[in-house]
Length: 284
Image (cartoon, rainbow, N blue to C red; front, side, top):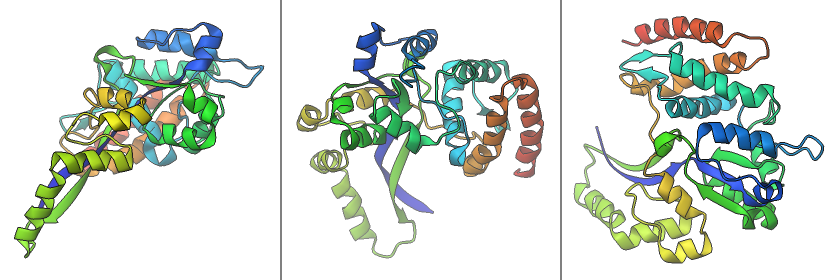
């Protein structure tokens, strides 16, 4: 019942504070195992610096997005063909890997994204997987950290593992002033308007049009997001797309529980799978 055109495309990318890497002689990781090794080398308990910033609490389901990304990096999927796959070996392996960062103290615990972003801006976190908001916050808070930011692709195979979200302009199918509506969409699709949109928002465009050189000159980090967007995916509940947000909120408490020391990941995810299978059945 709607016509629309995709506009803003925002993806997560791999954001690092290069000065912390250089100080420790650590190279930028290009594999998931190197990600763990780098986080361990960059964590310094004396200075209160963490190697990576990962969500360990639900925060409206956003921790789910991070775990979902790790699952994709491990070759799996949390939801496929109308059914959850929380107890699959790929999800278990991804969660086990995620938990290593938590149990070994390589990431702050029990804080939301706003705190993680502030810590990154203040040089207390070396790496994050996040959207451009992180870079813009750092620009406002700490020019020293901002000048040392490098944005690159996710260190997983084929660089998958980061979420892509797309904002649309919609027009109702039965809208009376159709001529004006189409004229508006045609205007938004013009290359010069797309460039202007990116200049004003400092966001990549859903058309995947290259970032204007003028914008890259002032914001070289945007090139990393423009590259990552070629690989990022829209995470969804395939077959039950309309219930993605609800699914995400239901799963998140289980993911938090699985991170608790001593808790069996297999047991928690097995319980989650049973409960979410019942949930999925109720939606059909």
